[in-house]
Length: 369
Image 1 (tube, rainbow, N blue to C red):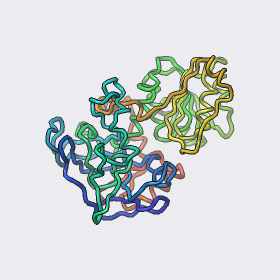
Image 2: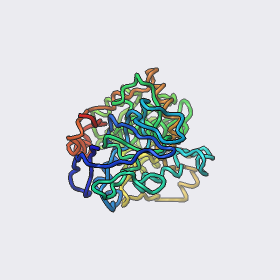
Image 3: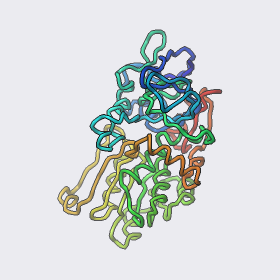
Image 4: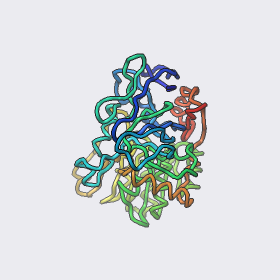
């Protein structure tokens, strides 16, 4: 099959047409990928920021397509179904799934191992194993995944728009509704307005937040955030984000701060801006070498401030993707705005350059050119 393969981190990706993929086995499906949007996590793998890889890899994990075949025992999906792929397909039986922590399912280990749950990749080229980037490898004509990793959606939702739900929208909206579970009227601070930050803004609006303060150095993104539900916009290059957050909350502080840009320093800013008892949610993925510093642990502890992680918006993809699709059809969740550009797969390197420079919110790659 045709696929975009990264043979060496830091080097251009090559589009080849001789990658082999396995047939779906028991409990798996094979999907014809139609569209895949690029996420910053893909770039982190490409650049080596998230560690070195032992071999070639196919990136891409935010995708949508059509079921091509199903393995034994798969009864909830059929050939021809339209699906969104997810990087954490819940197994439903592990310790975490049984506790309702589906985003922590053991199948999610594939994000780090770049393999299927059984340790294989199902991908090869000239007899050499090809890694399954972030557990999905969707910058290719086909994907084989656990059946719960392909979530059925209505046929009338455009796949080039639906694909962004696979990661960005699940992560951003889920961070608000699931991870933080904010209450109506709460004050929210969003630090960073990439695709995930914009999804957080929409999640906060859906949750009826009282104030949604956003911070981003790009003026066009601040203006867009206003159309999606933000109530106040800040330019971190000119505004004192913490001071203004305090002013906007009568000196109390923000109820919930969301760091979405993958910059550790913004986590510290969120902690400073939140009130006593407030919560800072780490949604972005900073480089491995970045850490945070708590200047006074006693003050942090005595004020009962909270700091929590967030993987894929704490979503159960089999439940959350369908409800987000319903919100899209009801026009309470805007997905189309996130797709700022479409490119053919042959322009994959140019698309990643746009992503790195912050030029686009989401670039969607058309796998079939």
